[in-house]
Amino acid sequence: MFSRRHPFLYYSLIMSSLFVVFILGIATIFSLSSFFLSKNILSKQFDKQGNVGIVEITGIISSSKKVIKQIKDFREDDSIKAIILRIDSPGGGIGPSQEIYAETMRTRDKKPIIASLGSVAASGGYYIASATKKIIANPGTITGSIGVIVGYTNIQEILKKIGLSAIVIKSGKFKDIGSPVRDITDNEKEFLQNLVDELHMQFVNHAAEGRGIDTEIMAKLADGRIYTGQTAMELNLIDQLGNFEDSIEFAGKLAGIKGEIIPVYPQPDKMSFFKEFTQSLLKDINITSAVSDNFRYIIN
Image (cartoon, rainbow, N blue to C red; front, side, top):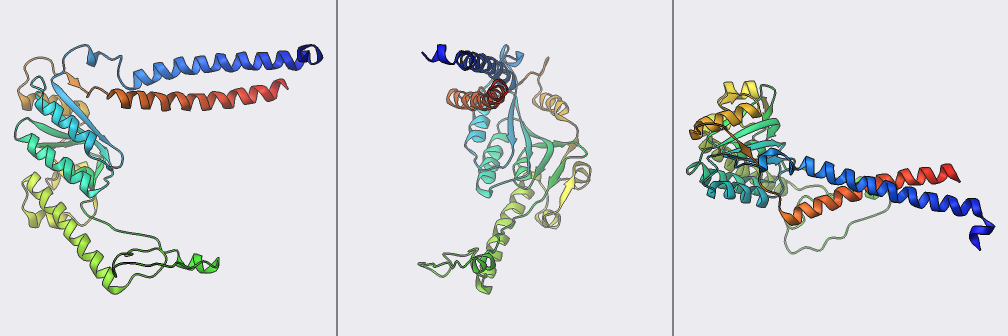
């Protein structure tokens, strides 16, 4: 028997297994508690009916589906008197930003909707904010960056040094425009510049419309530079200086809420909830696996 021939190793393996099971149990409990708390599932905001809906727009804007659904749900909920877009984003895709902009413009005619800018609300983040009735930012918020950029890296010299060459078969002269394995032509550069200029004017026109600013004035401000919240207010790019709590109070007053102003966040989607919890648990398991490996080396 293995246990008789190698008793020390046998009991070490048993102890290691028990330790791993114990650690995994602790990780599961910790993951559950931390995940629920991070999602505010246990917070009081779900114990009572809210009257100001909070839609968070964070990170790179690559999709509009989730944000649009949350805005629409709050707009159609009669118990929600106002909506706040809490934006903390450096921007992202033009298409998703335009879609959220359009949904925000539709909403502000039916219900007060304002923007609360966090540490950064630039480019696409400001694009969306410009569609709200009012914009509130901190003095040090980084915003603006009204512009469009296209860029890529040319790696053809590296390919030459390692003896590789690209072979491209295309259906049209512009099909491989922006290829990283060859120089850009003058015609391609002109084409891309025209594309960028067109998209830039869409941004300028929408921001001017949302803010109620003359297009020519907005165009002068839209040279791609960033502004602090303080400077943005002086240029009429935002309306008020303040933090998130100030935004909640302002939204409540704008909506004419009598009594307590209660912010409420969208209920998490069940499938998304399960997916995020699973990812959180797997992360903790990876950490505990590393811990158990170290423990194994110690007892060997």
